[in-house]
View: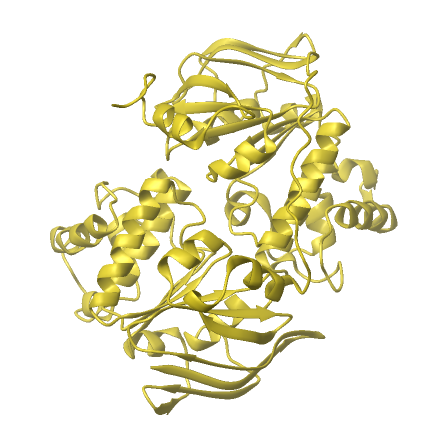
Length: 495
């Protein structure tokens, strides 16, 4: 159905793709695996007309093609859901669904009522129950992901690339997506599934191709390989996932929250101890991210109290929070974390710039030393700190974002889904780093959509439902089933 031969792509001195050849069969779900920076997203963007290769050939259903841009590829029946969502916050849900849709754009004018009617069945297919007229910036990151999936469905594509489609989705939304993928497959649609989540790949995909360092390492049916084998091919080594060290004695209170309420939170109380990794679980819009915004001074507190190191804490702005020793690694690194046009060095030191400033001058030498040290600690892979941060893979961008906030020397760090869309090797790096930070006495609050991650790394887990903290569980003794029961609002076991 789709084939490429000897595709090459360089970015300056960095080899993104080095002679990649690959085939997609009709009606199959084909996984592309590899560590961040392996070349998966670059290959997908080339095959969808977004990026121009340096050399190589592409054929669609046996016919040679040369895309002049993504619109031409869409017209030929190829759609893509990008990991960094290309949506417009200031437009409505329905308007975002219409962008790039030749059928809806053809007339040049369409009534809002007709646009909303066209949007509703697409939103229903992905299980998103929102008003099509709602501005997109009213939705959560997870809901943005569903809008992006719905938009591609509206193209009636025969080939769909999904780049980390479940990275921001909760378990129930993932199940709906898998059901949708099965229905598309029955209709003969071929799907390229770019993901780091091995369990998903072996559950939904027919074949898996592994990339490493810009090269295609292997392609095999899922039935004839294993998760361990794919991981070995991805990283070129054995990987044993490091887990946070659970310490039995965590009795030095660092942050105390009592009856905290905001526009979305209701009567939340808990204590974070020094050296503790406190997990936060919950479904979309349950209040997980809102807790971070309240602690960081971006969501006004309407009731309750906070104490940091036994002193009253009530930040009015993020500046207040940082000055007090609280940092927030946000869920969306593109919208809220990094400045894509600035260099890696500049992004790394942006939150602590006053330390390297003398009057109105910034000492780049001091910046470089601080940046190199923290990026080395975060195990960030890069060629040159002066390159734009957008030149890095998603996983390395995430490490830059984490390093940026660690340079503020926080006492409490709120990580909002820090391993979303990150490969297994990069996850291992972050697990090691967080365990080290906790060992040094940092208080960590860790939101995650992956319950196994929380169970393996956290000491305790807060479970949120509808803005409330349902319960605080011991991560060493609880189960995924108990967490999901509480996350859906049930305090007693379901019959």
